[in-house]
Picture 1 (tube, rainbow, N blue to C red):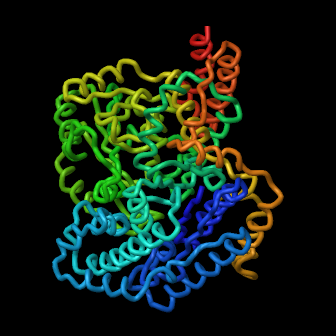
Picture 2 (cartoon, one colour; picture 1 turned 60 degrees about the vertical axis):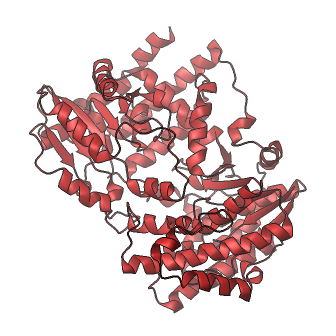
Picture 3 (cartoon, rainbow, N blue to C red; picture 1 turned 120 degrees about the vertical axis):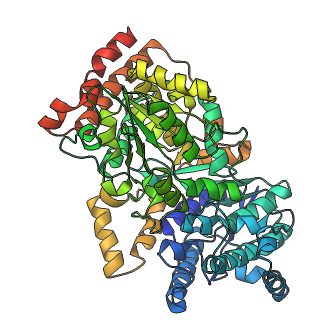
Length: 591
């Protein structure tokens, strides 16, 4: 096979190097690799510049430094891995540049946003990063935002015109990008799709304890990948997991509890007991419902570029409509208290500095609530896992918190199962208003469940391990607090004394470790959608179930002690007692 790697973001080494490892495995298997770089083709603004906290208004000299570093890392990868292929700057000619300038000279903003070239809705695709950065719901851009958009549209058009020539010249059998939602990558992927050429994405895995050591890889993009996994889940839902795999999932949750990763939006779990019921005025005889709102920025951006396609209309058109229905249901129920938890990503946080447009709408919508309803705003610093201790039921839109709470045994109710990237059978579902209210009542009646813990652990193993590629033997890098002492030393040396040390060491070290070459080759040759398509479900036997049971006891105990490290917290916590009492419950289930 001839496989074209469209690799535009070499400056982000933790993405570019794993991508190169996959390309190298395919090259070793005899495939022809065409490695395409950028070489300053997006010098006005690009994804690596945004990753460095820059904007289109950052001084040109500072942006140029990113380009220089990016070119250097691209050269290092080509030299170390022996890759050949053109740079985008060599593909784009003056005629293309003139045509792009002519298109961008159109003063009609609406026409630009609706621009389609070669069947690719390039005007919409170019909105993706802008919608994320600005956390917008609609495309009625300000003058400042439109200036950013023109830069993004120029980049997308450059990728589109160059991609057309690349596909004509090289006629690849497949196209691979790191993130198929980035506008420059998506343009080339959709061009390939229009010609019947399959395109694949790669993305760092989901387990925060070893995120950079794993890769999700699949056809399409993340918004097609996860729904596909959910559809495949029933084939594997009864398959028991090994103790090693279960322990890996626990490590992910320990990172969630610490709250240090930039990918964790909740505040860290309190070491001491936190009485959130008293804080929000929940009565002693009231059941606590926690409604967890999702962040709209990724959802809305994906909808605009055509990646998020709704196969059926959700019960509630907006989250505000959902909350209004909940308020109507709860306001006259003295036995219930509803806490509305706003997603921290809606406000400035450790990854993004902007407040979303949706956040402003929420502030207005949540005024004058009844006495048995309160709002948990991000600036209150309440950890999701302190709420988990005292909540009776979680009501979820599409946030990943739904599967997290399920793993802690807490019932979760969905109103739109198609929106969530996890199986609805981890909780309860109501797709009509009557069924939804009934599902809430049923969840309240059923309460905490060890079987839910088991199924959620199995889903996480399926999503994080079986659906991903492990590259940790060749790239054992960790992030943040999970870094080992040796890696910290190398990072300091790289930053303070000899820049580039880390990249050179990565390139050398990979030669002395085995990798998943066969798995990668098999995946591309088999022409399948995800790695799980290469697996066959194993029928569970009594012995494997017993081993899983024993391992689950150990992992649930680890969770309980991490959540509640002090004697006071353990004595006052409801969830701690349920988790450590899971041994008795699990014995009953096993028998």
